[in-house]
Image (cartoon, rainbow, N blue to C red):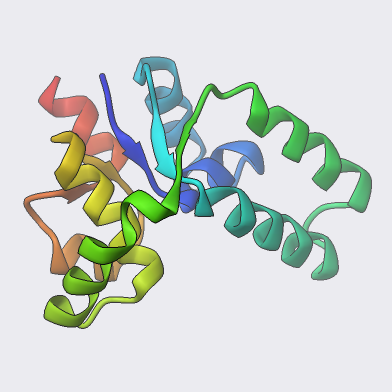
Amino acid sequence: MKAVVDTNVIAYYLLATPPFTAEVDAFWRSVDDPMAPALWEAELVNTLWMSARQGVTTAELAHRRLADAALLGIRSVPMASLVEAALAIALRANASGYDALFVELAVREKRPLATFDRRLLAAFPRVAARPAALLRKR
């Protein structure tokens, strides 16, 4: 299965976050050629920092999970190719510019957007779906 992957799907997998663990494990076993706007790396760094700061994980484990992320084979798409259309999407849908980058990439590549973000799921039901829903569609 091909998909654009939201950062929360990446983070929940790397951090083994309940109650999402089984769902993201199954998703990562099934996805090939995952894509995301290059923004995902900065978002993941921030998520790992917050997890360490809040005591959810250690600094050492956060560094290991960042290294593990590189092994997922996520194709990072330069944001410069997405920003114009993403701004239009953000303005039209009252979505954040960050979220609109993921939506634009999914639309452009004709791939579903795997996410747990409730606002994205509600605002873009034709594009965004939970990983489990994408697995059922295969």
